[in-house]
Amino acid sequence: MELRISVAELARVVSLAQGVVQRKNTMPVLSHLLLEAGTDAEGNGRLQVVATDLDVGIKTSRPCEVMVPGSVTIPARALADMVRVLPGPDVVLKRLPNQHIEVKSGRTKARLMAMSADEFPSLPAYESAHFVTVDQTLLNDMVDKTLYAASTDETRYNLNGVFFEPPTSADGPLTMVATDGHRLVRVERTFEGANSFRLKGPVILPRKGLAELKRVLGDATDSDGPARIELGFHDNHAVVKKGSTLLGMRLVEGQFPDYKQVIPKVADKIVRVTRNELVESLKRVSVLSQDKMQPVKLAISRDQLVVSCTNPETGEISDDVPVEYAGQALEVAFNARYLVEALASLDDKNVLVKVTDNLSPGLLVGVDEPRHLCVVMPMRL
Image 1 (cartoon, rainbow, N blue to C red):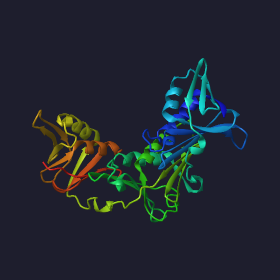
Image 2 (image 1 turned 45 degrees about the vertical axis):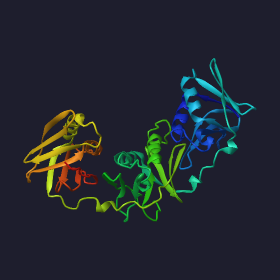
Image 3 (image 1 turned 45 degrees about the horizontal axis):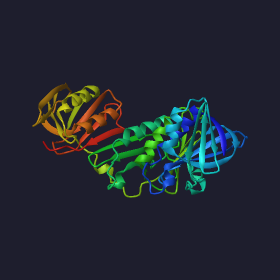
Image 4 (image 1 turned 90 degrees about the vertical axis):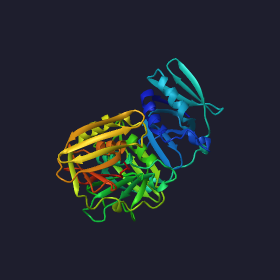
């Protein structure tokens, strides 16, 4: 294998694929990137880079000059570190007989140890999935608004992702939900073709796969015209195609909890507040919270909200926030970080904070956007 490619192009494709690679693997080859040099249907040279951890896989390519077609695997981290310091503008990669890769760029010359491409695991047949065209801005927004609430506790594997629920009717919404047991977020969106995924029911998209999806969607160098992508499902995998990049992820097995039972049906105490003012107040008050699980207290009374925090070791702080409220006085406590992250995900300038009592979940929703809501469980005062 021997090829010549722009250093900038190689850096982009390696950076895009490297996120999938895990540093610690039981299979050494999984810490490598598979590089395949060849020609496309039009006879143009292409470098294809593949990475996988057996749950998430990515395949992407860039134009290059191919002198000798072939394939090899190279340690992902070593290649990424090397590419960052190459002088450019081009780099030549050449496989040597002793399973090394020679890297030449300008006056810089190096050799990297490699492994045979035969040892690299094959990716599933992602191309056979049934694809639906989706606006990538819409999908990216839905992932942004839900992924932060997915659980990072590996023992609760059924919460380590985002619930993807296709519409149940032709004009119904696509729903995405995430929860870690302490908070929950639900986002609904309607678009043409939303009911065309051919899924038998809801699925759970893995947290890592969605994090890599955001990297793919953010890659402005690999796009075919308007901001449209292809999203599909095949067996137990979800697949995304964008330009010359294909990302696949194994779906999370397990039963997602009935999120509808968590969302409060009735909340008789409704506070209307400017979103940014409440966020800034929470940030100011939480400076005394040394423990990330320490609660902040919300004292609600007529047209007034007092946000406060008491730390036995450092002191106490309170902040007044103007609100619209005409109900009975109430004191309730929440995790400040959960509130800030929920409020930050809402788009509306003004939000409604709905509560029933100090032991019931708090519901946050934009005044003008009821399709996006957040639920935060209370803490004891």
